[in-house]
Every structure is written in structure tokens, then in C-alpha cells.
Image (cartoon, rainbow, N blue to C red):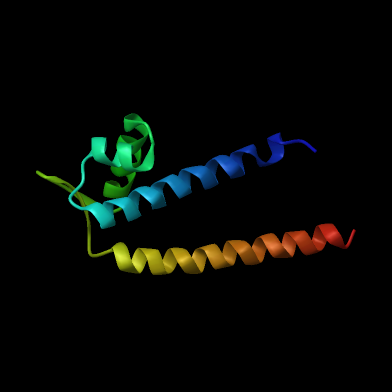
Length: 102
């Protein structure tokens, strides 16, 4: 099977997972800086910086003098994310059904 068909999908999933891990680690350790997040998650600093930039752009974290902190949008985002992941699982199961009924 050609792995190229799914390489983008898995890459996107890895990126989403990193952003979510970063958001949770920020919540659990706030205020927290780039170096500490890098150490906590074993992720290179440049990737931490990128994820934090996107999370800040989406209004999920904010930068303070002492480090990043989550915003009031955190809880609603995590709740909505859980629903979206359920939808993704449902779609994967639909595709699996198509494949198994060939």
C-alpha cells in the first residue's frame, strides 16, 4: 500500500497532537516558558515556539511576562475538540466499513 496516500493525514494528526499536548502542558504549568515546555514535552524549542504562536493566534493562550497562560477559551475549546474527535472516529469507522465490504 502506498504510504504517500496517508502521509499528509498522519503529519497533520501529529501536528494537532503536539498543539494539544502543548496546550495541556501550558494549562498544567502556567505560567510557562518555551524552554520549560521544551523540557517537559521533549520537543525542540523551535517547534514549541511555532505551536505557541498558533495557539496564541487562535486565542487559546496569551503571553505574559512570566510565560504563557491559557485563556478563558480553553475549556470550551477542549470540549469542542472532544466532539470533533468523535466525528473523526465515526468517519474512520465509516471508511473501514466500506473497505471491509468490498
